[in-house]
Amino acid sequence: MTESRRRFIKGSSLAAIGAGLAPTAKAASTKAIAPSDRLRFGVIGCKGMGWSDMRSALKTEGVECAALADVDQSVLDGRAKDAEEAGGKRPTLYRDYRKLLDDKGVDAVIIGTPDHWHCLILVDALAASKHVYVEKPVANSIEEARVMLSAARRSDRVVQVGQWQRSAPQYQQALKMVRSGALGKIRLVKVWAYQGWMKPVPAQPDSAPPAGVDYDMWLGPAQKRPFNPNRFHFTFRWFWDYAGGLMTDWGVHEIDVALWVMDAKAPKSVVASGGKVGYADDASETPDTLQAVFEYDGFNMLWEHATGIDGGNYGRTEGIAFIGNNGTLVVNRGGFELLPETTEVDGQRRYRMEALPPRRAGDVGALDLHTRNFVEAIRKRDASLLACGLEHGSVAAVNAHMGNIAFKVGRKVYWDLAAQSFKGDAEANALLVPRYQNGWTLPKA
Image (cartoon, rainbow, N blue to C red; front, side, top):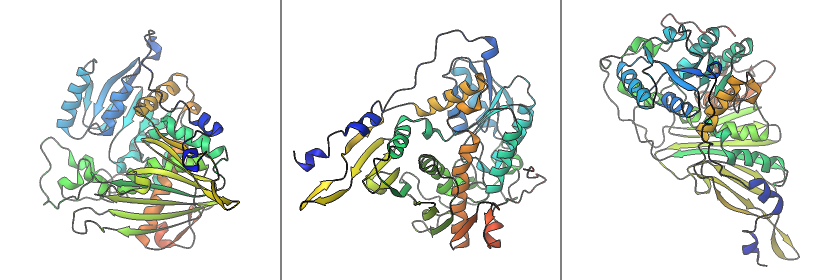
């Protein structure tokens, strides 16, 4: 048998692990839902993923969209119509999320606002005894993540983080493959996002906010600035006041899976390099190109990102590669592939393990699996069932923010796990805690 052919034979153990890659999300049960099990959801921040999450949750029997909150009246009106077209009643509309949290008829909330609002809303939602599905990244700073964890631990409510890749079968299969030991010692994990569709953000002049937008409420605890369309819907991601760029936007998805599989939480050190390399003159603040190296016990993790180009590792625009002594497992939203290492035996090159050819994931409906998992955990009153509870979801956000901090200070930073701070680095430590403004106060941990 030729070695080239051998590469495409399914090794017995890993083939068994990789079997059944692409189950689709099961259809909602036709069994009648008891009134006590019906769940009334509210959405806070309805334009993007907040509504995608709600639309997904509605596929689970017994879930209703009861209320919407948004600072943009046009978004509220549009989503109210969408909710009715999805077969429900017209939801109650709120301009202030606190009014929604006062609604005793709402059981759970989806937080889909810009990142700088996640902490305040989650803490308030738990105080109002609501279950919470919070979009990624969980927070816009390391201290906010700590505050949110403390609030969740004090509460008996269920909190799911929208890092839905954990619910996709190919990532669960990757965990089994890596932990089987077949890849040998994992020395490096690569994680990356090359996003060609994310184009430069042309500079635009400041202007009056659009009609129907409560801009002061949109800013919330962020620095007071004139309205600029670049800092508003979607492209807020590229401005430090509200988010952390591609590192925290896409990075938390990939970093989450990498650290979950490797059973790692906090790095010993981080160093990052990059900047506005591709589009130096566009309006964005966050780097369009970045590499960051995270050092953990026994392995390193390399993060890479770039906007405007698709030339990612292994011919994939995004993904995670677990690089071991015997082979490399490459996994992404499209599926996975196992690339064996070679060695010389009796003067001939031999593969150290048998390969798995590319396995396509197909349309698994991972977001639907993730929102259904949230509903199940609520109904069973068991947070241990969550695919990505706040304890797990915050790990990726904290690591991603460490990468951004290393980039901002321009040097290698060293993390003191016991002290929860950077060793001997006042400048880096000053970036752990956000400065809330406009009368808003960061909650206590």
